[in-house]
Length: 116
Length: 112
Image 1: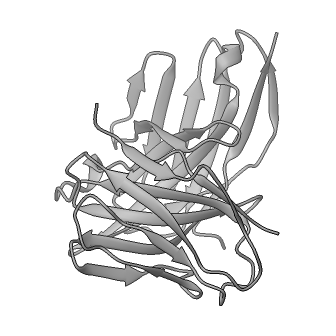
Image 2 (image 1 turned 120 degrees about the vertical axis):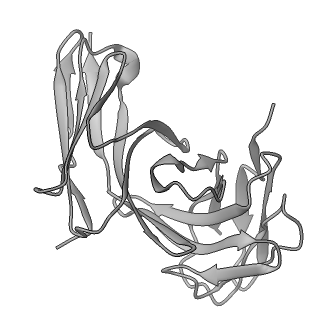
């Protein structure tokens, strides 16, 4: 079955460490997204990529980096520059069809990152 | 004004009740609209898209009023399993760029 897989499910980071969150999809979707969700704040877009080897900053990109070397993969690195990284991180993908009413996102099950 | 606003709730209703959620959006040029469901500590899942003519999926009915920039979700005959947070999502589409704006969600608890 096609889907989107995030790993690990839980991640603990020490102060000053960089950590990388994995996101893999086998839906043949062109577009992929990273969101962060904090209690009471809803989903906020970190980075997105609409095609391989291209990505754009979202609303809260500072302290994060991404790469898109393969269509299936869109890893997110949380760097030490991110001052408040504890959150629920969600990866999503969608097709790039040009019918605006038709695109929904498929989400992975998320990674909970905690700074210790 | 927030781009997408929802009443956070919580809505506490008995099984079998009918409950309605409302959502307003600020960009009159928005082109697509969705309701997502999110269970506690899980990822959001698409519940239904919202079309101008209104649409129904079983016990769920979604309505869109572009003039008032208002979206609604009606749940009939509530089940315990409907307990979740319901996210209103609005999509803007300019050229090749899509942007989804997420509401903060409305919490629903269906009680036995």
